[in-house]
Amino acid sequence: MNEEKTPVEEEREAAPAAEQARQEEEQACCGHGQKAEKECGHGKCGAQEAHGQCGQHEQHGKCDKREKREKELEAARAEAADYKDKWMRAAAEFDNFRKRNEQTRRNAYLDGKADILLKVLPVGDNLERALQTCADENTKKGIEMVLRSFNKLLEEEGIEAIDPKDEEFDPAFCEAILSEPAAEGVEPGYVKEVFLKGYKRGEKVLRYAQVKVTT
Image (cartoon, rainbow, N blue to C red; front, side, top):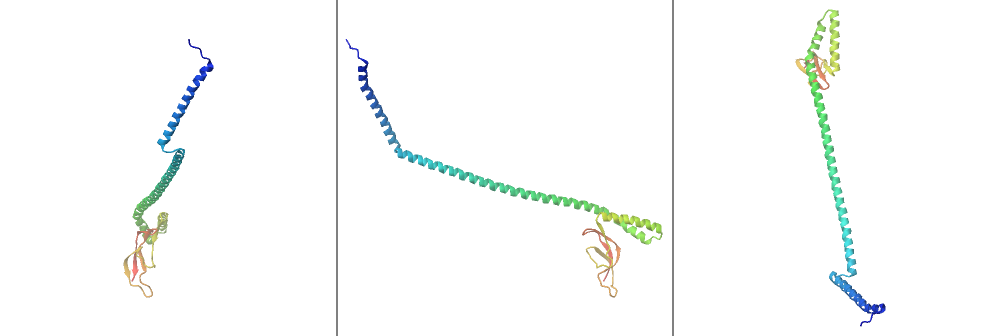
């Protein structure tokens, strides 16, 4: 017949088994720790060194990224400056083209008006001839009034008469159709008589004056 054990006796019997299990567990943990250290090849110092290397790599990585961003920013600024330069050149070229086009249109318009006025100029020539030969005072006054209106029209269009009598002959504005020897005391190369007045707008001659020149 088995004797029943008291709780104290059971605890005494269980204590050696628990202690043995604890020691086995510690040995297993230490074995794993030593094994892990052997496989790594580094102790705590190795771990610290590895962390230091990681920190250096991380720092170098940040520097590389910063340098890369700076290079990209510099390239973007250079590209922007190039685009700005091209835009300014294109704007200047377009402005020059616009001005040339406006000047071309204006010149074409003025040339068209000049062609029409050139056909009207003989009217003024005939009025002047009629005024010189007219004997009737009332008719003469009427012709003078019409001639003043004609000359005002030319003035409003910026057209000036070329009437170089007694002036030095200038082939840029005059056409010599006759010549005569210069009288005593008169220098050659001067306009002796104007047969037909010329006209100009600015420096552009619409019609050359036809003149007689001394030689």
